Length: 272
Ligand SMILES: *Cc1c(COP(=O)(O)O)cnc(C)c1O
Picture 1 (tube, protein in one colour):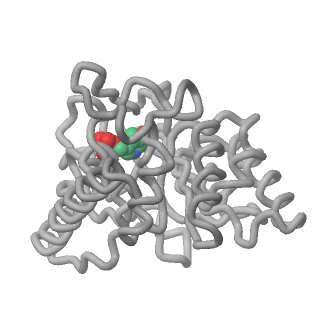
Picture 2 (cartoon, helix red, strand yellow):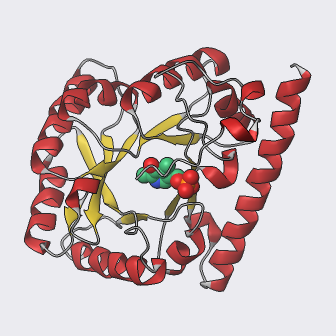
């Protein structure tokens, strides 16, 4: 390994330890076991080399928010680490015409918010299972919108019948496994209030399902609040990898470890 990679490795190791410590403290404060809360690093905008470093540090699952970037990165990482199992989660908006590609690389999708999208993913995942291109159903979290601004993604939480309809479509899918709910708090909202409503909605939906449903909630800035309200998967980008660069690997030129540092070239991207 080059000196630069070693520096990045130290940086990522320290950030990972710090986030794990936050998670442990949050679980303790909430009277929960931190083993039941998955830490999902969100690696969008960061290069495959960062993923392989985090993989060496013990991370086995990663989240991405752009389909093409994710597909490219998943292939690149597979080449770099060989046969070691890596689980990729799609956490960003999904276009129906990307369902087949997603079924080829994703272990889970967190941002599913319509029956039409569920049906497209089900067809794609069932086809991939039949062809031997995947070995397990695609795990689905239904994204709910806490403020009704469904342009930003999610089924409106104020329309429980619609939430139920989308969840039921997932449960019925041969290629899908219904895992739980996901949400991103509205901009400027009090995260505790937002996650409290999300937890109540999960409890309502849970009554209809035998499997224990999970909750994908909490990011770099609000993971403590999410853990307090029952999150079982926190999606952490910035606190692990740093501020996101302006360009996205797979979309423009790949960002290398050595080109990430100059502060002047880094912009805080709020991807929601
Ligand atoms: C980018 C992203 C995250 C990570 O956000 P940070 O604030 O950088 O931790 C989490 N969830 C989704 C859906 C994202 O797009």
